[in-house]
Length: 124
Image 1 (spheres, one colour):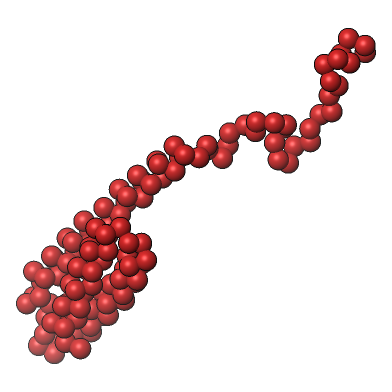
Image 2: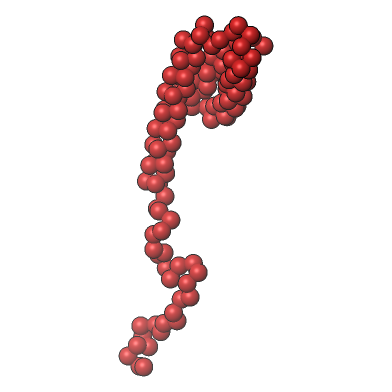
């Protein structure tokens, strides 16, 4: 695979991930995200091998595309972080925190003290 084809594959998958994010389709985000990660790793490996072998190739002709891909990935990462924080806040609003005191009894793991009913307090 040539660097041109490799970069084009990464750009296409980046477009698919963006579309899946806009459509709020978690299964598509996961599927295309994994494919994007694999394609980006293959592209980086290919460019690394080309630079290491010094076969007259360098990343300079593709540098603007690499920078654009990096910028788009950073924007997607920031967007995902915002969505995760929003989902966490919404979940915290729906569910009480895990450290809240139990409504009845001493809570799990603690032995409850046996107590007398109120009617027997005066008799003891």
